[in-house]
Amino acid sequence: MDTSLLRKIDLKSGLELKIYDVSRKLAGDRWYVGFIVRVEIPIIFLADCADLSELDIEKMKDVLGETVLFEQKRDRHYIDENKKDAMLNGLIDDFLASTLPYFSEKDFAKKYALKAYKIKLEKSSWFKT
Image (cartoon, rainbow, N blue to C red; front, side):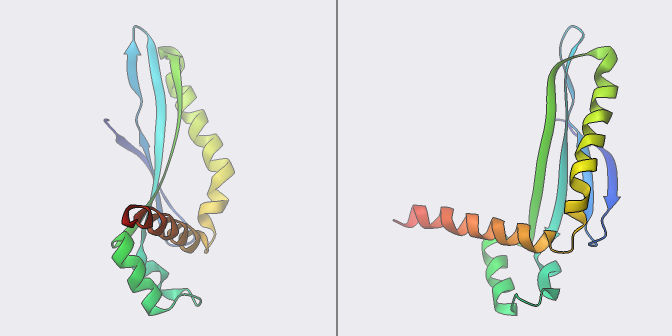
């Protein structure tokens, strides 16, 4: 899938949100219009969390690696070529209006990393039985 970086937004939490365009022509004048939002969360970024010990952070690194990637996608199918840019901008604006405060919370990184950690541990335990 071809992607091109559209925007970078520095978050209050110190992380960076990146928006990538993944739109492509489908057939004739019809387009798939979409974008992907990514936030890379370095595990070391969690070192300031009072309720996580150094041991907890090392365990998370062992399971997740050095970073955790938050990713969400929004899209629409069969959009008229003349409306694709407006559709993409509208999707991005709506997404940012509803989610930017969430990403800007200082606990976002910790909450998401812990969620990813728990999911990965659960998945790995399925394969051990």
